[in-house]
Length: 176
Image (cartoon, rainbow, N blue to C red):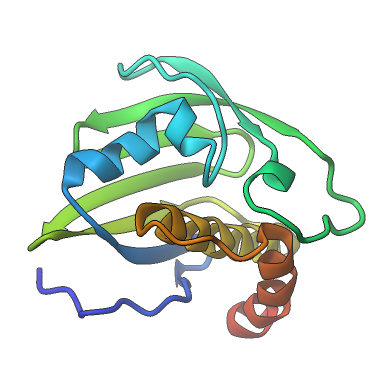
C-alpha cells in the first residue's frame, strides 16, 4: 500500500460507527510499538496501564490527561482520572495490537514501515452514540498530536485546549 507523504490529520468515519485516523511517525517500527505497549511511554501521550503481551490478557487503562502536557484547562464534566477495563484481542508484534475497549467497542493499532517512518493507523469500532463518537474522535486526534510531538522531540500543545478546539470541528465533519 502506498501511503501519502502526510496523511490527513483529521480522522474520518469509514463505517457509521467506525472511526479511523492515521499519523506518520519517525521510526523504527519497534520504537513506535513501544509507545503503544509500554506503560511508561504510553502514559506520555495516551494512558498508563501495564499490559501482559498475550491475547486474552486483561489490563486497565488509566487516563490522566491533565498530566500529558503543560497548561490547558480541563473542560467541565471531565474527571481528573478515567479508568477503563480492557483486554488484548489480537497481537502481532510489532505490527498490530487490537484491544477490547470497555463499552465503546474495539480499538486496533496498526503499524506499517514507510522508509524511515512508520504509519500508525488507529481504528475505533462500535461507537454508536454520536456525542461519544465526537468526543472520541477529537480525543484520538489530540492524543496523536501529543504522540507526534513526543516522538519528534517537540513540546506538545496543551491537550485539553486541543481537544476543545477539535471537538466542534469533528461535530461538523462527522455530522453529529
